[in-house]
Length: 237
Image 1 (tube, rainbow, N blue to C red):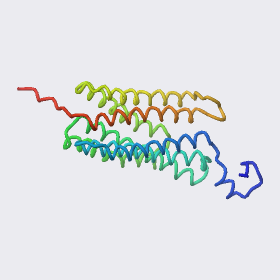
Image 2 (image 1 turned 30 degrees about the vertical axis):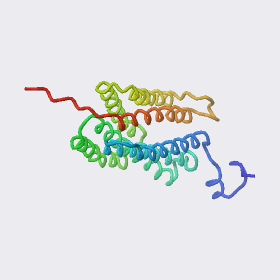
Image 3 (image 1 turned 90 degrees about the vertical axis):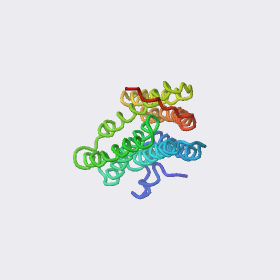
Image 4 (image 1 turned 120 degrees about the horizontal axis):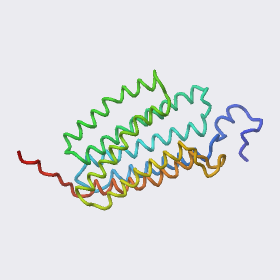
């Protein structure tokens, strides 16, 4: 029988055997499994658009990493006065930054040819050290992560929309819907909308909605990677 968190156990047992926020932890870990699976599947899509395929696989891998670290913080290191919490929370924000880079890169490869898309990806990567310095020395607030993640999400949403406009591939609308749903999930989290304040709080509900949104993004990404790429001819002068 597993010990209760309030039982008289050693500090080590309480630290490693008691999950402080099981609803948030388990839903975060579920996102980890989901996105890790999506990353593997994306790497195996048959396509000629290899750069876009790699960007999609990287994007889902980074979301999986972020969820893994976040779930560990919520489950085992929630006390923000400990060094472990500080290290893992900083790692979570770093993973958010890497996810943002992956989103910029994915959107760029949807819209542009490979050389120009690489320029966008490298520019996003070049800005990452600035974000890291801000997290380390200015503020480690989640708002810093949002400020980095939000523009990348909007850019990827626009990339899906413009690609749909160009190709009329209806499956791309799933990606658009998925990214729109991520904003709904964020609103649920920020407004603290919960199924139950203790057993299934706003963060857990956020993760569930995110899981559905990421599934739609996965389907839309597959359509973008496997669909025929068309490039508009340049306007004549």
